[in-house]
Image 1 (cartoon, helix red, strand yellow):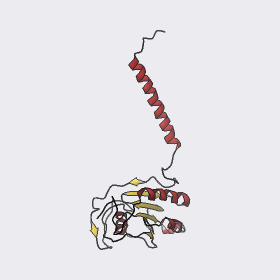
Image 2 (cartoon, one colour; image 1 turned 120 degrees about the horizontal axis):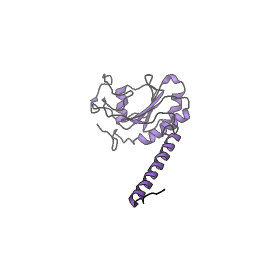
Image 3 (cartoon, rainbow, N blue to C red; image 1 turned 90 degrees about the vertical axis):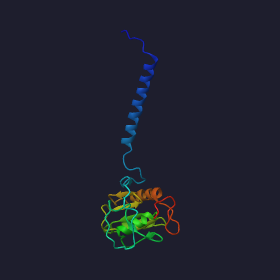
Image 4 (cartoon, helix red, strand yellow; image 1 turned 120 degrees about the vertical axis):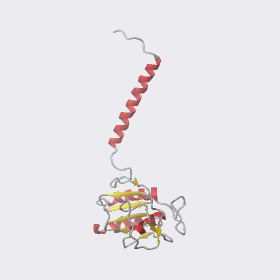
Length: 190
């Protein structure tokens, strides 16, 4: 069979086209073979970044002020004016207006549904100078961690070791060192 001579440019284009096809197939195989979360334990949903609430610059003095938030739990929005942030472990739920104040100060807030029994006890080791662990009976998921405009939800708390691994990864990525007075280097101030 007679084939006309293929020019040098056509040969290069075919070779490049074949290589692109091979790389695309390889990437598709890797992506489907490595399902799950990017986080350490993989039981929590992938962390998300939520839009900054346009009213995040509003500061309140009244902890009982009624405020509407764009997300639940909130990751930004109107908040209390506070001094030093709370850290460690709280035995009482925080109001949304206080939650956002802690986030603005650079704290990662880890909340859990108190009806889950020993989950709160298991999470206490995550309490530190950059985190606050607190119950929240109104959470839409068993465990949720929030930082300023960031959130990770854990739809199950059955594998606590994996939940804790996911939360530790979230804290490592999103926790900020809080300096005296509540200022966050490079963070939202106000």
